[in-house]
Length: 295
Image (cartoon, rainbow, N blue to C red; front, side, top):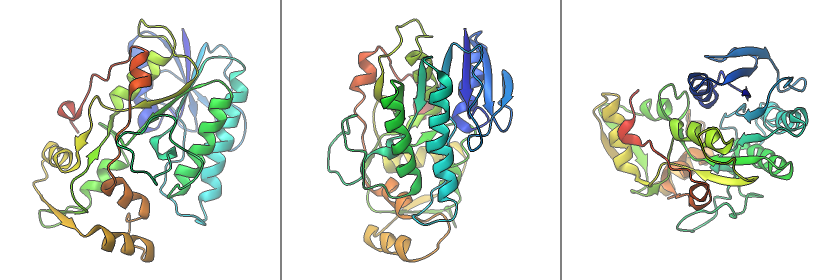
């Protein structure tokens, strides 16, 4: 079985490529840089369609994940990678089964729902260009009949985004966090990898029907407990200091504090729990959690 993986030099794609090779699959990694395993085939999402010759299955992980506000000079590039790049992948797939790795950032954040299902609106309300462009790509993939996975806050060894930004905030053994404790769904990269393989029918179950599926760890975490676990895992002793959320939101909107944006504030202050019913109905069970996490 030959699987084509885009973005295999990135965080999620690299984990998928290594796992797929360990299972004996023939893997081709499509991207500007080689993946950690399998064969490399050069592909620039901004320039041309990928060459999936010989591939039986396709997983589209490639994305530009920067947290960009509206009007940022790099927003056009992010749209080209996330939206036009997805168009290129879907066209090149030419009827092959496709798993598109989307994001829970596609969901409209203006909600008080106890748990978000896949029917939650995705057309508006996004706090950055990443959410807007991933939502547009998500719609393209669904229209093309792909399996669309929507993980939230993916973490794990080699994470270049979420955890490094968090750890950079520790000062004098204090970790300042906006707002009070809230429940959060998080996604171990190993769970996302398992979902990709399961959706393709490579783990003993049938391939998943086309459509959207939330992907996360089995149960939500309390935010502060999760933060303490991460600090302990990284041997960074620190006390969590709660800051007034309205003040932090105001600062995020009106200043250029590095890494502090409306999106990052929302990520930490709004309780978001994903409903996993659809993925569980396909027989998928998230087997990994923060208790397994090691840097």
